[in-house]
Amino acid sequence: MTGLNVTPVSLQRAILNSGKLWISTSGYNPLLEFDPATGRTTRIGYPRLSNYDLLLDGNDLYLAGYPAMAMRYRMDQPWTLTPSNFSFNPTTPTSNPYQIPPHVGKYYYYSAKGADGFIYFAIHHERDSTGGDLGWYDPRTGNYGNLREPFINDDTRDLDAILGGTKILYSSSSGAGRLFVIDPATKSVERVITVPNGVRSQIVEVEPGIVVGAGLSGDKQSSYIYRINVSTGEFQYMNRLPAGGKVFGSNISYSHQRIVLGPDGYVWIFVGDSLYRINPADGALQKILDTPSRSLIFYNGDLYLYGVKELQRIRGILTSSGDISGDGSVSAYDAGLALEQGRGALEAAHIAQQAVS
Image 1 (cartoon, rainbow, N blue to C red):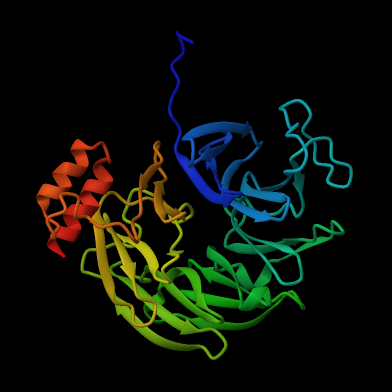
Image 2 (tube, one colour):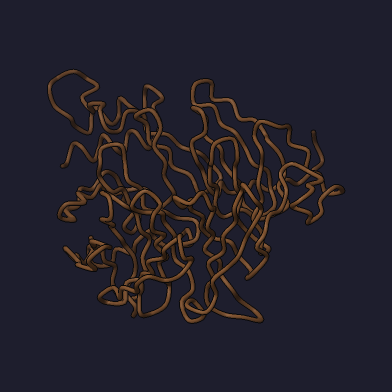
């Protein structure tokens, strides 16, 4: 096809689905499937929203985004959504996927599944309203609701299901840096934890009830990583990240980024334009490589980086040796060999980092 000025789009959010990567794209562009085994990319369909999060629940995929919308895609049925057949009719859907309630706020940024089977959404308000919101939807009955009042002054920074989904943890983006512990059984805030230094954090559960968070301080001058026992409210450490190192770098917004618990049990995160592996026990940092900040996901021992227009892979990042030459050491020579063998600039950079570590 010629004569068209087509602008490449960024890869927004990726999840694993039956050995494939399902990836949403920026704006109102398509949902894609990437097969790591073949390198083939397949277009699944065009959702009616600008997607910010994906959540897999059995045969259902939930898409959360803008404008004020979440959609449910029944993956065991064909994609039938088109611009002409969309309507908000969740009890009698006219398309697959279809929009589900609640319909509040402006941006559905984060999603999580509770032990009660409900799907929860952390929602951002703007324009005619401010702050955040927590919405929920029951896939079995279609019942829904939301909790607004506790979050009027606490917009969302992240959402996670912890303790097997018996608690939902809502992280605030307010300058106070607060964590809200929500009980799915009562749909109410059980406790509020104030994070020292006003850190507005992305969060990940590393052990049952033990959460690692990372983010900018309330004054936006420093970045911190911390570990907290959510059940007791005890902060087990609060470590300042390297000077000048902004969590997630500067080229991707918080709503796109996540801190990731890797298959090695370590937390993986960008600090500035460097990828770090962090021991959740004490917060100790190990630099992996220097590269512009992006989102990340692991699959089958490989690390995939996305968030711009390309999907990049570092093969065997946890197990492979950088000693390509076989001389018993890792050096800049091995990094050069990686480039010559077509392994890519990222793998070469990773080997170069091993050489100086």
